[in-house]
Length: 132
Image (cartoon, rainbow, N blue to C red; front, side, top):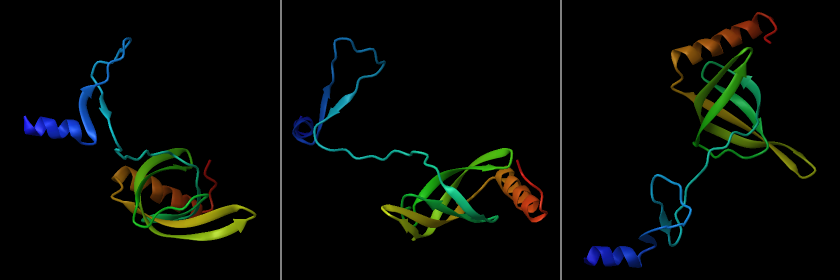
């Protein structure tokens, strides 16, 4: 009973939100205080360099050192999604009030398929073929 009393006094509550027109399958628990989270949003970036192990990208926002990100790359007619770790980030240009950042991303455990797509893309560039 003491635990239940502490729960009611803490930043969280055990009371369920009850809306008259509630159509959810499950009850929600109201948070009395703050509970933080993060959202992943795909933002555009420009790839400036690419290798088998990573890439140099340019963005309009700073990427935090050692943070992990899912990256969607369109390499010719193939698209891949892989995880990358930010190895470095610096300001590359400032135009009026717009700041551009260049960040080095290390690919983290890409699958064989993704490694093959990247390899094929790099070989095509080196061979001078146009990828479209």
